[in-house]
Length: 277
Image (tube, rainbow, N blue to C red; front, side, top):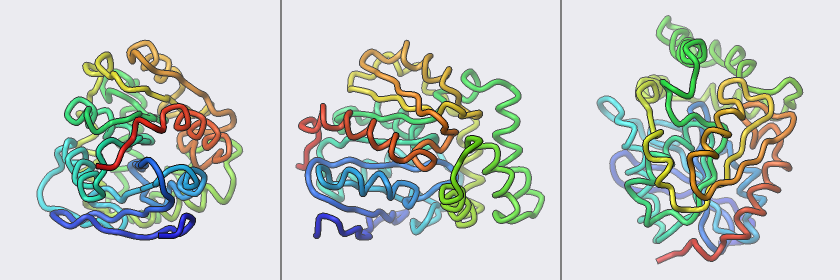
């Protein structure tokens, strides 16, 4: 595989999972948010591919990954991540997640801590009930769920949702990338993910995280403001935090250069912790 060649792969099983991969070296896996897909991380994959094997997936029910029968148990995502690591022969990986992706990692760590080299948790909440105000809880559900249950399409949903997420000076390129990922959502799987997120709570396990943790929050993130990160910083033993100026909730897409600088510096300090089997 060429160092700069982004290639598509599959993890067989139920559901089948799609992922992109580029580069060589210690493995780093990127997990997208609730309205994203593997393409949300292209800038980051390209940025680290000269020192890492950079992988981004489509979570179950997203992008080119399969939908699934029945309700979603949020822990299903973590089990799928373990399947991906196994399929690629990865012992320990650097794991980077934004929003829902970060919540997957906070659920994954207590059950699969021996697979985690480092965690980068971005623009996220650790408990739906306690980290978000009642107003933000209502907004989270109503902006995402209500229009679709009323028969509207993802195209109808996208503009208001984008405005609620990005910072005031978000580029048109970032808006276009987010718009496309929202238009491409699998509606039924997306609704299942919202339902599973409403009961999410990882607050009881943060004190037990014994891997290095990088927290990243956007200065203008209205859904998960930096104050949530400050609370996480107090709870997680080996954590550091960066706030990206002039970014909202999609900090990696809104300010990719600043985001990439942070993760590259963090990964370089810990590269040897990630291994293939």
